[in-house]
Amino acid sequence: MSLLGKLTGKEPAPVHGREPLFLFNTLGKEKQEFTLPGNAHSVRMYNCGPTVYGMQHIGNLSMFVFTDVLRRTLEYNEFKVKQVINITDFGHLTSDADEGEDKMTKGLKRENMSVTMENMALLAEKYTAIFLSDLKSLNVPIDRIEFPRASAYLKAEIALVQTLVEKGYAYEGKSAVYYDTSRFAAYGELGGIDIEGLKAGARVEVVGEKHNPTDFVLWKKDDKLGWDSPWGMGFPGWHIECSAMINSTLGKQIDIHTGGIEHIPVHHNNEIAQSEAATGKHPLSRFWLHRSHVQIEGAKIAKSDGNVVYLSEIVERGFHPLSLRYLFLGAHYRTNSNFSWEALEASQNALTKLLALRLSLDVVPGEVPARWRAKFHERINDDLDTPGALAVMWEIVKDESLAPDELLAALMDFNLVLGLELAEPSTELKKLAASHLKTELSPAELPSDIREVVEARNAARDKRDWNSADRLRAELSEKGYELEDASSGTKVFKRSQS
Image (cartoon, rainbow, N blue to C red):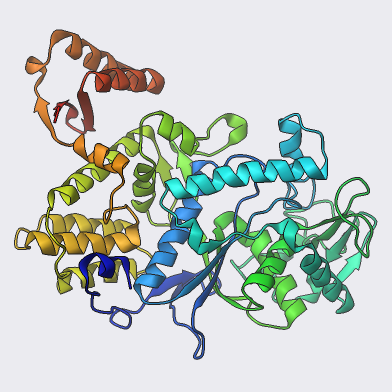
């Protein structure tokens, strides 16, 4: 029984089949209707997960809000889903051209830990725990997802490399075993990669011991770190890890594979080439979905430039994690989105109003109005149009013809996809909603000391001095005053003491 069914004692009318579900398939470069093959019982979905050598910034986390919405949409359409998010804890080199050191090794050096297998495992568990905690904070149900570690599938990874060697798709060099991309005619088909341009040296100028510029590492030799193998000590390449985990957890062919747009040119084309060559199964995945990037204040997220934000920082500044989720929902997954503290504040304000409305509906949920459910379903089934789905939700709030029990049922139904905890808000969210019970004050109604702090904060915002603005905002909050920034200026509210 669905969550809405458990809360209301009656299941909503089934929606599967009313509106076809369309997803943009990178492989076909178009929206395609998603269905399951004739005898399949559930969707097999693999989501490229993090390399756990450090904390995941908000750009990384946006990927898993996207895959959570994808899963929820599939389930909203009455599909069963088996979801796998891998944890890369070894073998991810810093360069797509198979150069540089392993990222986990880089993480150990950053934290002044000696480079040993034991310390690598400790580092991986530390940052895996933080990652999973962040997902929980963003209302991603981690207990319904499988999280395989790359290091736990060593036998499967070695066996896959051996198969490729035996079939003539791989060759051994002095420093690694490589996949021979010239043997796979469809290499680069995903995303329409210009293979001839790469061969001409447009992307990789120095081939080294590779036969072709696009050849990639299946097994990296290392006499100091890794495991024993038929090719000596070393460790599996990043790409082979994903293929082995897919085969082991979901099978030789899957329905949906996701990742960031940066995975298209190399990582995902490599996965396709090695998997299909090894198994003889085509395609590896029927659908490929890719999320665009999140920028911060209009600039690329770059740790080296200090242009990075973590969820812990957002919480420290007084924002609820679901405000970030709401912000992510406000942009379509295939368009670049922008994070700013102003945008996050606006998202928290919207979430607060929504929660306050939901808690004010002190009724038993009734029937979901069919016309509104169809409208919401149409939007979310159009390639996960979350901005459109949010718009429908705010439209229904304004529909004065609805009875309170109908409105509540609709909000709870939409929440099955949006994941904003509208069904059973936590104590923390209830406190956030209570902050919406406040009275707006004009400048003349403000005590002089409060007015001075508000003016100082406005001046700090004009100078883009966000640290000072946040400090002054927190100072006002401690005194019972809340701010709401709008195009017409900053509104000041006196929080209710009830």
